[in-house]
Length: 136
Image (tube, rainbow, N blue to C red):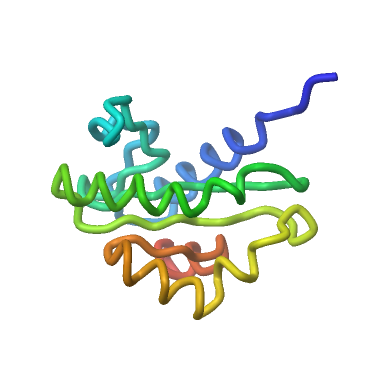
């Protein structure tokens, strides 16, 4: 039985539409932003105003999206360092029952540790993203 893996894509489209309709940001989606340190191409979900990277992590049921969060910090910091982006934000979304690690990823402890290693990358919730990036 195959899993439905389209929820992430649907969420990306939803966020892109929200930004285009309810903000003044210049929005590009699914952008090749350079190469990862392993030589592979790095595609980012959304680039705002040509200088801010947005990575969207939607998880509806328990799975591997949350296990990729620390690696996402590393990849995004490398993109900032290597290609001159100003900053990067990871947005976590989806029902709480779909996440085991969400509270920890958003905790002061985790954020402080990540900030010490990856100073230009942060993690926020979808609600925080809406409050910060869309017209209020």
